[in-house]
Image 1: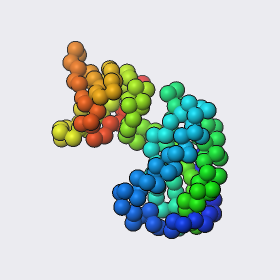
Image 2: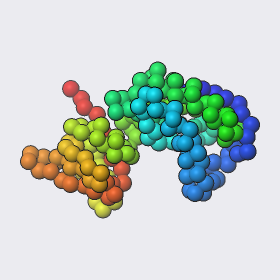
Image 3: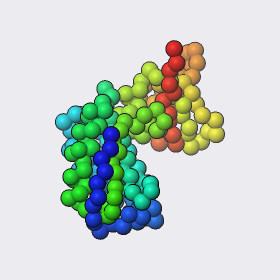
Image 4: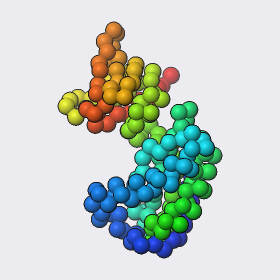
Length: 173
């Protein structure tokens, strides 16, 4: 679900593309501050933000979820609530579009809460140390690590700090 808005502000449309990482982090923190209260009524959480340009329009992708999964109607409501906040903060100049969605299978897991939600599912984990990805069933998650069952009676502990990317693998019946 997305909304289009034409807004004037202090940031130039292409500014994001040339920002350094510190400036991107500050912008993300600013957007996160008013996204979090919008998500509270549905017990949701912000997973990630992405910003890109598309045909002269700035596209803000907002990835949200709940512990039970998020519906299209909930994404639409978040988008409707988020748009006036972004306008009042004058974040973008020119045209922009907000796209609010669940992260989906194509986006990596980032938060401990996401890992907990996916206990019992098959994951592919790329660590900072190994060149070969680990694949297995997620058995357990703690604040600092997870346990992946990679075969019959074989479990591998993985420190969360050592994970570069983790993807949920789809199940086919």
